[in-house]
Image (cartoon, rainbow, N blue to C red; front, top):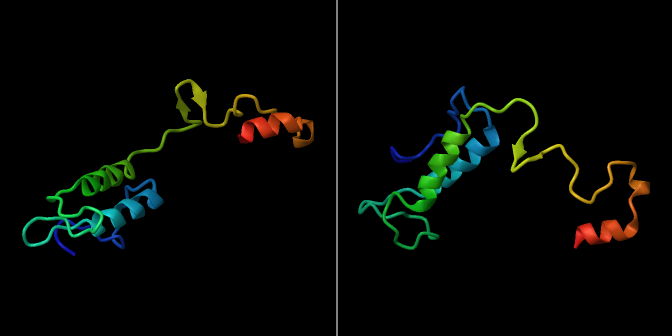
Length: 105
């Protein structure tokens, strides 16, 4: 590994999302520079380093260290634990078949 790579076995203690950390570290390790500072990943096809994937991996490594929000996550006014629009909140037997078919489409 080069100085730009991330040793996944040496995860920092402040990491709050180990899965994100592991995935971002794997991407960073796959997108290393060669002697001419060209990304060695076949998906970059000769892109100069640091490539877009390596930069995105760095963002993922930073995000994996961010403190988690307490409580439900809200995005655009919809809470993560709210039911999907049009879905019944009662027992599954009370959801009409047409409503299920429409929601699945």
